[in-house]
Length: 277
Image (cartoon, rainbow, N blue to C red; front, top):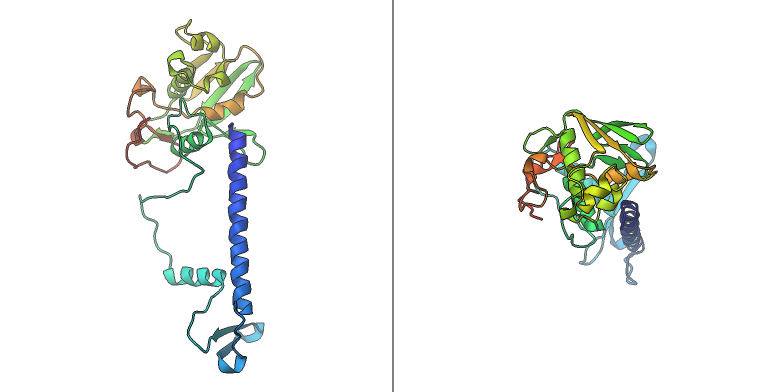
């Protein structure tokens, strides 16, 4: 499943969940309004209070059943009351987030992830080099701040201040290392086919070349990639590049996906337990 299909699937699941919650809320409101039972309590036997809000003319009414049982309130008003009583508070560093997903992931290794759950988790742990606009699916900046296209050459400029979780800078060398790691024959990455139009990519992927001449680094913030032919999907495919640190030397060694080796251009720091491939 490609990234576009994955985004559409997650959107449809979210819509189903929302409509289900809306139906449940509507049912609760109807039950509260209609009594939810054939045994109706006359208005005279209950305690009814009406409060005026001055010139606005709005009123609020609450009723208490004449015999045992409980009163079902509006979920909206209950939530508002809960929020008001909590009084807010200051945000705290750390903690846990529990997220429901569609299934289990095969891996969180950004070099070999190739199904929806793995891809989603990789994007949660590693920033993408290029992102896709959720409305138009057009490529937009992420770790790559900008790019220029000249014939078959794409020159990327990296954002300032992007670091791995251990505090080390993310550079163009790390991006080049990641792309070559995806292309490397020994990696056997399902993502490799997305980058075979890079000059020398096919030879490197086939094991007949020791390097990829189409990938060049001119300085820590600049990466140039030359293609062998026009490729309309190239920038979209760059969204599958989640840079890993070149300092790890190999992308397949156990433990390289530890939090200290994850990169983010945001203020989020990964302090979770180690996650192995």
